[in-house]
Length: 181
Image (cartoon, rainbow, N blue to C red; front, side, top):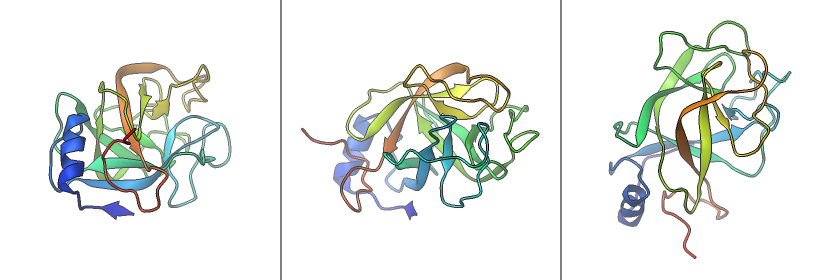
């Protein structure tokens, strides 16, 4: 599902949290963490390929909302794309597209996502999402388990610490405002 409306309150909270300031920011939801490989994948098509075998298995706890159609900034990196072979999120900013679990390199399709990084985790956001320098996918680096990498072994974190927005526990929550205490 795509969201294109943002309230004034959400705009203020969004910019305070470090997200790019744009009144018509759009997000795509249904991005999930795989509990087998720790990679971010799109759960909307259900034909994904996991480097740990078979299909990705979604962590039921979080539905991530990824921003697109927003400018890059000092705290937001673009060139993140959906791979139409394995359905994971990978960095498309290098000539080498990384190792895809569906064999060969990742193949970009669809939106160009712009991910916030190196900002404070607050409200409905989660930090420690990292670029793997072997497969070029984004993976959760929150625990000691790095997850299975399509290039072999575990993922290897490099670069920015991405902070990603997830849907809150309220039905229909799509605003980018942090949770209040």
